[in-house]
Image 1 (tube, rainbow, N blue to C red):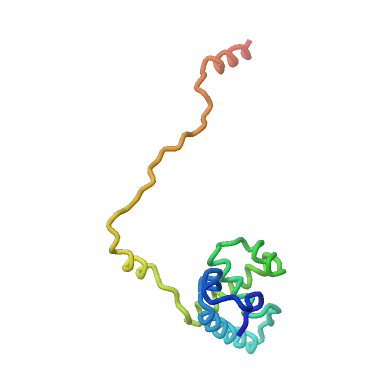
Image 2 (cartoon, rainbow, N blue to C red):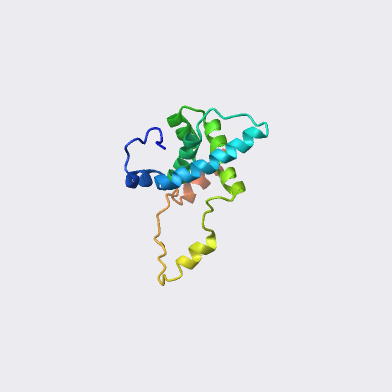
Length: 145
């Protein structure tokens, strides 16, 4: 399966752009295609965007955390449509139970070998007005006469 806009792109470059391999992308597209077929069979309104396009939008959102406006603009849809399609992909992945992501505990177990913690405790100057009470007091007393 060739993805529109990614013809001839090597697998390594595709992974760098999307965060997944082409094979994983194809598996995800099959899962979402089944979810869409189930949705349409139950009388749902069909989507005019291809499943692969919606999946690419979702991967762009996860990988780059681009705004819905930017994702929608690059795919020629509104930001509301981009939001709706990304949410559909996320919900379909969750409800189907396919391709689960590792949970927080997996990340904690994996990083237990680290012994050092770096804390950024640098001070940053804050621009504040000078403490000049004499000018403020003089202005207040002049206004009371």
